Image: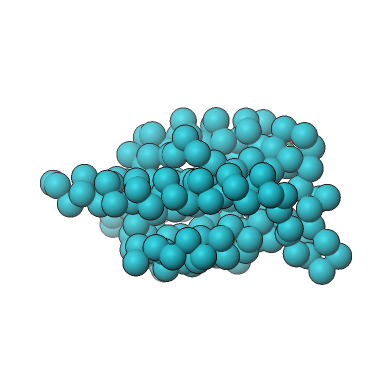
Length: 190
Ligand SMILES: Cc1cc2nc3c(=O)[nH]c(=O)nc-3n(C[C@H](O)[C@H](O)[C@H](O)COP(=O)(O)O)c2cc1C
């Protein structure tokens, strides 16, 4: 089993991210190759990056950084669940990324994006993919893009996907397993 961390990126009260994250976590468990953990940045509540030493040195001063580092270090793969905020991904995710360097490297990521409107967060995906390159983290071509997310969430806060979204998730997870196997070989080949 590979360790998959699903990162729910938004932190505002009433955020929809964890509902989408819960759904993709269940899909990932059904896939069968992953031990799945959801990391909700709203609960983890990292302050704005406040380490004195560049994270490339891994000389972490604060407990919140040490705990975040340990969680990300143990991952073999990631799924970023992200909304689009002002044509990009949320600052909370940028902040969580920039706390660390090595922990993200030589691991693959799937991206699940969503928005209240029709564009499904695709501009957030483009920004995030560009930034992941710098961390030597490889974002998959396959992803899940969810438009009009509020219409898919019922009164109990359960996200119910369309068939097409489920098919996209299955495809992405299949590819994520392949890339996880491949990237592990690259990671171990020092
Ligand atoms: C600060 C902020 C900026 C937003 N910017 C965009 C945007 O650029 N494009 C878009 O399609 N939706 C945008 N939205 C609407 C979001 O798609 C929608 O509110 C979504 O539920 C946000 O994710 P969250 O509920 O997990 O916070 C924005 C929402 C917020 C709160």
